[in-house]
Image 1 (cartoon, rainbow, N blue to C red):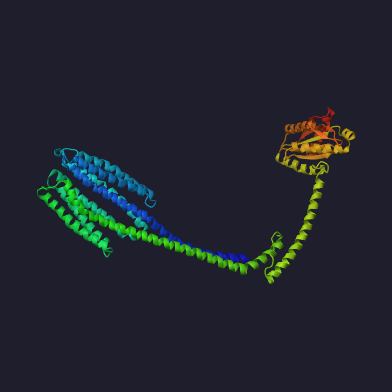
Image 2: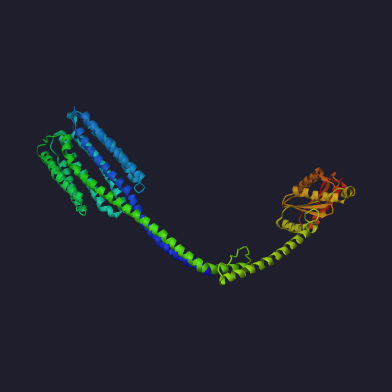
Length: 577
């Protein structure tokens, strides 16, 4: 192994090891940053889900008030209900949009459940409207209970949506689990607290006592509320040291679990005894709903704290990521600089000198030999290499001159000196190979032999220089008309021969006719400036099984003789087919 390669391998190994450690560290910090970055919009989406559930739940208050409204109050109550519906619809639409645009939360199942809630709101609202627009004495207990249940039944789907949104955040950042569970527990507490009030809607409207099912349902809601109260306090145990959480829990105990429960207990006792509540659903809403606001306030305190924590951690993760990337870049640059200095001062001079010696030995003379920068051993070697290179270049120049001379001699031996096409010997050498290949692969092969008519008379009339010019012109004309794969040669004197590959007798005859007409129409310049027209006679033969090149040319020569006998300037095809 060369020194240069060994140095490269060691450098690459060290660099790869360093980069592996650096990339691992950057990757870890990047994942932390990406997780914290994606958690911010995910937390906003989760909050929007809780808000949507809250507003859908709040819509039950105006709906219950409208169902229990007197005839002269219905228009005002319905207007208030429509405003509440618009708010809850907008919240659901915002939730859908938030889920759809957040890559970390986008989920076809969540979107479908939001659409189901939006669709289910229609029939539930229609049931409320049907009861609310009825006369007071025509309202039916069962229809009122069914309408209240219809509005409540859309909530579980929203609870599932918020649960899935929370699960995705918890998966990305488990440290937020306690706060997320507390916020969701507060939202559920608000929902169950609202459901307790809604269970009194039908008894208030019908001025009747609570039935057994209603008492059981209210008891179940009581149990759930108490369970959520304990769960909420347990989940917020680590937060109570913060003043805002401690105050929020204290307000929750006082305003809802004391004042709110006292009011509900009053309604429950009245419903068990006389059914004379002394209030309408609208008055129940006005007295009870404000006491539930502390639940939402506590939920918002939790969510605000979560958002602040996430944004703070996101900022910290970004700062750490930038610091790690910066240090990695600086370390990489320092490592590269160190390797460069070692290579430049230690390895490169020795390697370059070795490469130059090997290159000269291998004949790589295009490499520039650098001038010696220092008067040392390497500098002496460079000067010696310059002398050696000059000697090798001189020797190679003489060798190239010799090879060029050999090539010229070889070309001259294969080329007719006058026309520049193949001479007879070279034509025969090439044609022998083509005949063998044609017989081996059973391909068509034809020969066209042609002779300039009355060439002796032309020489006698115009001189040999003009005759030579005509020979050159005939060769040039024929070369231009033939294909690249066809072989043209001077057979002797004024005779020319053409070997046509992949050509049967018909194609060969067509080529001969084309050559004949071209020569007939061509005018050649005589030595004295006159224009001379010539013609030629052609003999065509095709290769047959068992024939060799000599026999093939003999057949073409016989056909050429027949062309001359029949008046010249014509094409004759060999009679032997």
